[in-house]
Length: 348
Ligand code: NAD
Image (cartoon, rainbow, N blue to C red; front, side, top):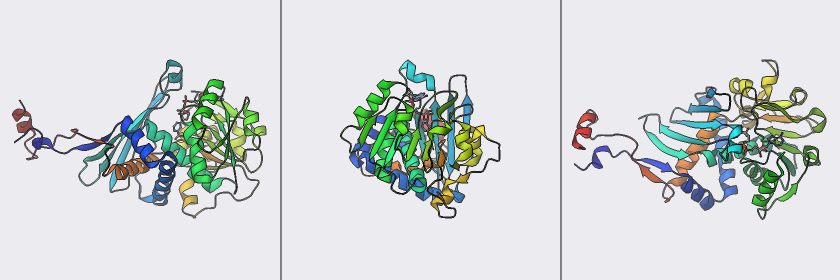
């Protein structure tokens, strides 16, 4: 028996290179729009999922988290970090990888990079929220925080919501210039702004994706006009928020999974029973999203495991019959399941 044949359960592995090839093969906007659809499908069967707030290991400089969930057929988890100080050291603030498994056998079906995939799915999630909550006809978005997530966020609202103009602002003008450069020629009207006030001028949608391990006030109450929709995605840890609490108090707040968002989201600033609406109920039509033209809607997005599950199952489906993965020898699987030791002995 060959060594190979004695442990032949191969697991498809999508490297960063292959993820980039897959995204370009599908098209960035199509990929994000497909992810938005996958997220909507999974949010529509919300009650079937095993749900738990993510398990975070916090340090003074960042957090390392595990994000598991299952729909009873598939199980997925993501390993992800959040280290705002990393950027200053030439490292990513957020990196990730993930696994999708078969619940029946417990065997992994996919092992993949998820740093790019997290940016894509976070953008798809904001687009889903924007589609369901922003004022009809919204065409301009202010993008505050022009780091790693920002271009994905801009393209997602273009692809899913028809946004035509993005107004960029970052405390670091080099980040804004990078974002504008990357978005050039992709069909968006891109405006670089020098202050957050300038960025929100004429915007019906405001997305904040800043990184700081602190309670920040990226937006103050007087900056948010009637009818605006906000995606606040940068506040996603205890002690890390982006909005003044008066905005949160005034807005209708929509969340992914309340037990997690109450710990990590903008609403950590509020009373523990501050009213929120779960986005899945809006997606299924059980609850209305925006109720009036004047209402300020806030998607207090922290990133929930089901979004990663959607992304994992989408990638698993899309790599079939493509060269965009390699088989990884990850699982010891002897022909005689009881003879694990024999497999090791024969390999000598
Ligand atoms: P990044 O470090 O690449 O970019 C953050 C940008 O914010 C930087 O360019 C920085 O200059 C800017 N910034 C910091 N303070 C600012 C301020 N006061 N005003 C304007 N700009 C400011 O980080 P990233 O990977 O783009 O992630 C952004 C945030 O989104 C992080 O906090 C991250 O944890 C969070 N995130 C959330 C989700 C989610 O699902 N909700 C997913 C991924 C990342």
